[in-house]
Image 1 (cartoon, rainbow, N blue to C red):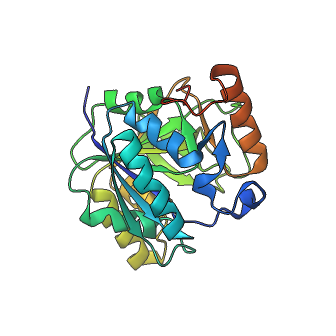
Image 2: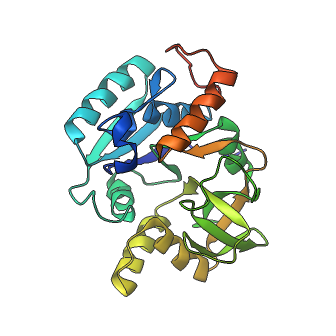
Length: 253
């Protein structure tokens, strides 16, 4: 099994759909710990020790929390500010370029996943310069918000198309990638050629070159906590698997 020690986390946006639960989405509470801590803990349990977190909205507050979290968890956490945090998410990703030289995980601060999902990505054998996305092929997964999820059309382990508005698809984007600096270049090239600086834009370009891979995460559970309804689903999941306390390893993953 491969080892990946670094993780890039996008935590720059306003998260307006969760405003009623807190002004800063990464710090919205889920059963005793902030969303971003749950996201980081799942990666840490898979072997990650170094985090690069891209901040934006109310960056000072989030950076202060992350400093304390790093000391408490013994994690190395770098924060990078994205002044264009209201624009497409790929701009946050490319800011990690100066901090990540080798292979790394990429995820979002509001994606709560089982550690097993990361392990699935680590088990995959990938060509050099390939970028892999964890995909869920359970199209009836009740934890997925079908109107918001990014869809994927894939075959033979490779991505052919990706986007929220696909009408033909056979998998969902879990929001967890096993990436390398090739992704930075792809996002910049997508921005320069068609004005699309999203993560999906970069993945589409990689797909055209046969470099975008899809890894089936099987039954690994994951939730994109992007609305009060999805937060409620995540709370019910945790209530069944972990006590509502802020224990050292609160995540049930």
